[in-house]
Image (tube, rainbow, N blue to C red; front, side, top):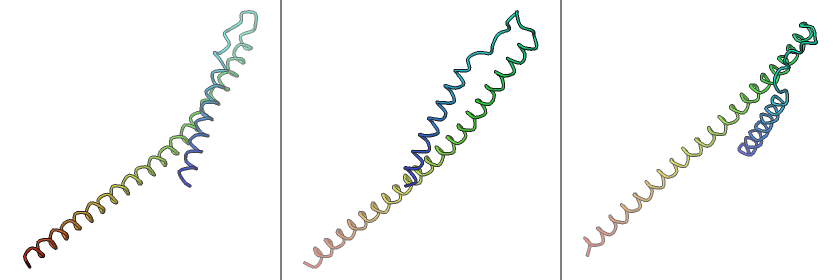
Length: 114
């Protein structure tokens, strides 16, 4: 269940990142100065662009942070599973070697008795 939620969260966050990047690209470049307009009008237009770009970049950083945290959780889960599998493998190897030792001991004892 946790893995499915993590995958959905990562997918959703990745989609948000892509959308914010598209929005940021659609803003284009700042409006260059138009000589016919008064300098204060040019400054206002530039300020409006910078405000929008800054808001999008702030949103993008926030989503990247969430995306990173979700990936860390997912990797942590994967590493926990990996460690669990290693432990299971060690236990199985130990059980196999014990079974082989018992089998050899039984075979030796049967040979000795005859």
